[in-house]
Image 1 (cartoon, rainbow, N blue to C red):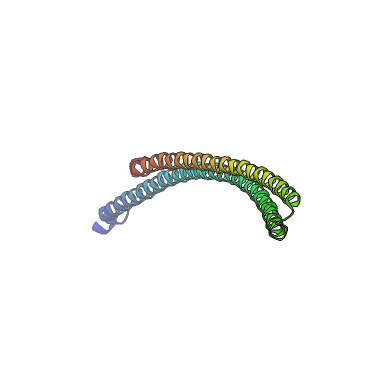
Image 2 (tube, one colour):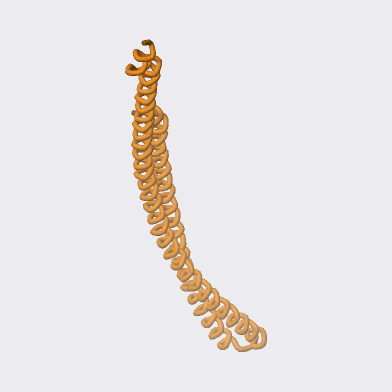
Length: 194
């Protein structure tokens, strides 16, 4: 009789085990779904962080490009001024060669004056030649002074260009520091973002 009652029915212990198994599967499924949800949130946060990093890197690249363009334009101006200074120095060297020629001519004429003490007319002509050479020397010295004035102006232009470059570099440094502050703020807030 007891065998007949237990055979058609389900053992209560099996029912409890099946319920525990269903609860365990349901809990496992809930855990897996919550882990997938957490991974999706983390992936979204990582995507936002990567996008923000790419934008910041874009700003940094644009800033570096602007700095390089500014420096290259200033370098071109400086090289132009230096080339102009080289031309002025070449003109000064040419004038110095003329002066050396005039001094050599004066030396030769003074040597002639020693040998013609009795000929005052020839001495007068030699003195006139010396006066002419001195006038030419004065003209050459005036040209040298003009070229030196141009050289001073070119040096002033270089100083102005260097001052402008310093200002641009300081502006870029301040901009980079400001942009770095934004990224530091994002890094501080990033762990607390949803």
